[in-house]
Length: 292
Ligand SMILES: [Fe+2]
Ligand SMILES: [Fe+2]
Image (cartoon, rainbow, N blue to C red; front, side, top):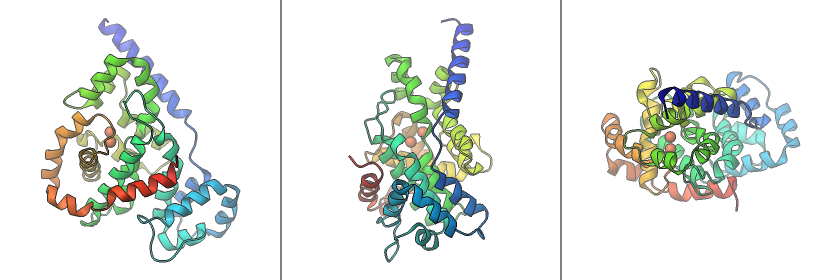
């Protein structure tokens, strides 16, 4: 293929991917409402809880998550209002986002070679691991990191149809590229899964810091303000893969693991301790979010 036709193909693909992002189904209404309560803490939650009875499926799952081993605190949470008071708006936002993206993450992503459920398990593991790494340090982004970890590869469900269509040679390149498969995606499609994920976060009206961490999760240098949380997500990505919770493209992650451990001063032994019990908690949340 000539340089010119490759450029034209890249541009065409990027335009189609941007269009696919605009056409993604929206998040549940509850998501926007809880986000509003983060911005305006004084707003009354009672009315909202009433309205949400109209969407019992979402509400039921959010309450199951609120009572799970990972999110639960002492005592049972039996209404959205109760969850809001007990967990706070930011924690509730995490639960609602998880519920909103779960079915898209749980499907088979043939282009990326991910079986049903694999991306959801990977993303939950990254979210919990990144949060565990952050909690010990009081860095000021404890409330954001779980959602950033959960959504870091959200560009993959959007891109998968294009990766599938590109054929086995392109897929092998994405899987095995030794440095960073993100560059291979950009070369083939004009846009990487990290960029696609960030654009989707913006499309959904999510906080700007989330989009920026997602955008930078393979290329820390892509962000000036959020290098630290992006690195935590990338380190959690590597640990999740090493524990059998891979999200595809492991070659790229392996390359950055040692660098991120050194930069954050984390040793594998600390990590073992920090993340004890996470596989069981991933299984518990998966059973709620994507029952077989
Ligand atoms: Fe990624
Ligand atoms: Fe990942």
